[in-house]
Length: 398
Image 1 (tube, rainbow, N blue to C red):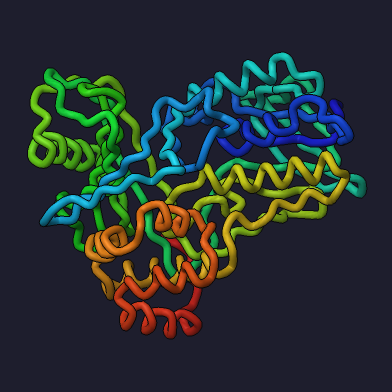
Image 2 (tube, rainbow, N blue to C red; image 1 turned 120 degrees about the horizontal axis):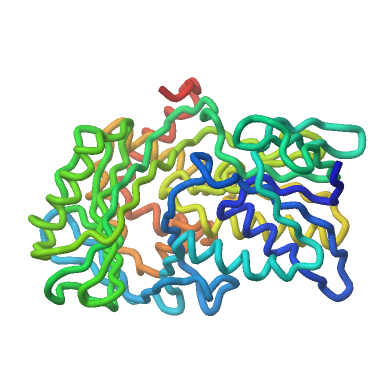
C-alpha cells in the first residue's frame, strides 16, 4: 500500500493543474505528498484536444500557449462583422499535448508529487480518509494496487449526467489546416461565425483560430440536443471551409472532435467526507458557453491554497449562483426556441464592449454589469423563461 496526503485521479486539465499547483515547497506553507493517477496508454486516454480561455497578463501556463489573440471577431448570419480589441485580455489557445509536456517536465523534478499510470477501480471512504484501488489495463492489480490518502480529488468524466431541466450538447469537429495561399489574418480570431446553416434546434457557428497566414484551426460547432454522424461533421467543416471561408486548396494536418454537455444540472463537488470532484465533473464547465479551463483553474487554485494552509479543501463552485441561474435561463430559452441564438449573440457582441462581455461569460462581472448586459437580450422571452423554470421537472438526459 502506498500512502500520501493527496491522491489526484485523472491526468487531464484539472488533475494536472492541481498536481502542478501542489508541486514543490512554498515558504511558510505545508507541502503535502501527492500521487497523481493517470490512465495508461490506451483507450482511456483522450485524444489530443484544444483548450481556449481569456485572461489578462501572464498566466501560470503561458509556456504551453500555442497562440493568443487580443482581437476577436463575431460574424452575424448577414451584415458586417463585429470586431473588438479585448485588451488587457488575451484569448489563449493551449494544446493538451503541450500542456501535458509542460506539467510532466515540472513534476519529473518534484520532491512531493509522484505520477502513477493505472486504472482506478474503486474509491472507498475510510475513517481517516479514502482508499483508491488500482488495476492495470487488463483489469488486474497494477503496481502499488492500493493507495491510501487523507484527501482524494477525482477529475474523471461522469459516467452519466445528473437530471436537469435543460441539457444541450456543444459538439464540434475541427481541422488544423495548411492552405496553399495566405488567407488568414494572424492577428484576429473568429470566435463565432454564424454564416453556417442553422440546425432545426439550437444553433451552429464556425470558429477560426489562425496561427499564421496559411495555418489555422477551422471548426464547426453546434449547440443542439444530438450529435452528428462522422460524415455529417466532415460535410459541415468542408462546407464552412470551402463555401463560407473560401480558403481554396488546403491540407488537413490534424483533426479534433469533442462533445461538451451544457446543462443546468447540479454537479456535486463533494462525494464523501474526504472525496471530491474537480474539473468538468465538479461543475467547472460554464453551462452557457462550454468553456472550462478558466473555471477549473479557479477551483484548483483554491484547493491547493486550502491544502497548503491546512484547511478542509472543499472545491469551490467555479461560477456564482447568479451566473448559474442566468445560464439556466439561457439554455432553456435556446432549447425551447424562444430566442434565436445567432441573433442573441450577435446583439450582445454588437451592444456590449467585447472585453466586458467576455468577463460576463467567465462569470467575473458584478450585479450591475450583469443587469446592464441583460437589458440587451430579448427581455420579454427571457423573463417568461425565467418565470417557468421553477415549475420544470429535472429529467435524466437522453
